Length: 131
Image (tube, rainbow, N blue to C red; front, side, top):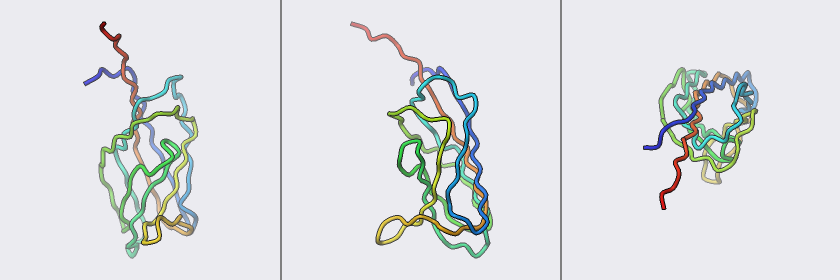
C-alpha cells in the first residue's frame, strides 16, 4: 500500500425546498496538489417519509456518478467508494441528483430535503523507480 502524503476531508451540504437537486461546495484550503483519489466516506439524506425514489449523485470531481442512496425519512450509509482521479480537482465541487429509469438517468427537478456527504481526497507519495 502506498504511503499517504496528504489527506483533505471535505463535507458537502445541500438543502432543497421544492428545488432542483443541484448544489455546490467551495473547498477552502485545498493545497496545490492533484489528489490521486476521492473516497466517498458517508452519504446522509433526510427527506419526506413518503419519498420512495432512488437517487444517483453526479459530480464534476470525475464528471460521472460518485454514489447513490434511497429516499425516505433519514438514510445514512458509508459506501467507501474510491474514485481514481485523472484530472485536477477544482476548488468548487458541483453535484447533481438523478433518478434512474428505463430511458436512462433523469435530473431531479423538484426535491425536498437535505443531503450531507463526507469526501476524503488522498495524495500518495511518489517513490522513485528502481532500475
